[in-house]
Structures are given as C-alpha cells and as structure tokens.
Image 1 (cartoon, rainbow, N blue to C red):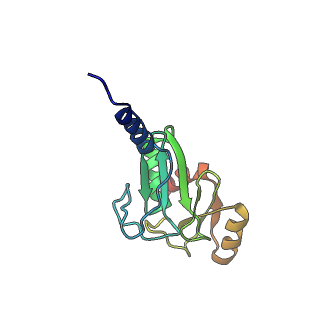
Image 2 (cartoon, rainbow, N blue to C red):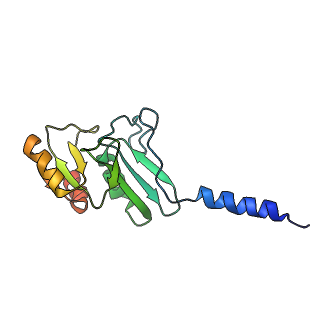
Image 3 (cartoon, rainbow, N blue to C red):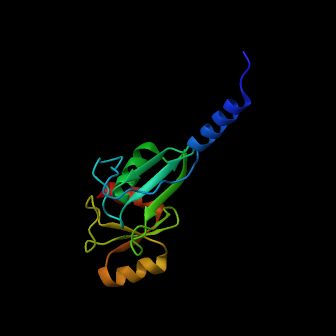
Length: 146
C-alpha cells in the first residue's frame, strides 16, 4: 500500500504543532487550577509550567505550583512562569523572579505570596506592604514550614 506524501506531511505538521513547548494564555475565569481545582481568576497570583513534552499546567496561585513541584520535582520542565504582581496578567520566568511574602497582600490560597520581576520591584512593594523577600529556590522550604 502506497502512502500519500500529502498525508505524511500533514501528519508530521500536526504532530509537530501538538508538541510545541510553549505556554498557553491563562483564560481567567474559565481555566481551573491543576493543583487545587479552583477557578483561576486572580491575574497577579497565577502560575504555569510547561513540560519538556509541551504539556501545560496552570495554577490559581504560585503556592499551588510550588506545592505540586515539591511533590513532583522540576526535572522535566521546560518553562516555569508566575504572574508579575506589578503588572497584572504579565507572566515572568519563575526562577528569575523575586518573591514577597506579605500578610498585607492576600493570595488565593493564603500564603500571602506574590512574584515580582526584580529584587528592586520586590523591595519597592515591600516598602509599602512590609514582608520578606525570597528567591525561587527558597520557596519550597519556606512554604513547607508554614
């Protein structure tokens, strides 16, 4: 049986498109948190990761993503993003962000955790709302102890 070059090409294109390693926009008010199953509505505390195979996982709070990754690990992840508290709806690289834990800024799951694009931005928000500044690598331990 001879295979059509058109169908072979179509199959390759569809396979390539379905395995794209890229984040998808969060549909606020419709997407559900992968970890706690709550609706994602807060544009300043959402998070997302994408696996090396292109599978996307969205979260309503940074602490949900941190808790899931504490259980699963980060070995097979291509992209980790968190919402920038200073720019609602903008996603920034999680490993490069600075994190503020301030009881004056509520997050969806009660960890009072917000991400900011830089240490300078975190310090500016800290001046207004108090709290402590952290790095990505310290979050798992800090949230585990709370």
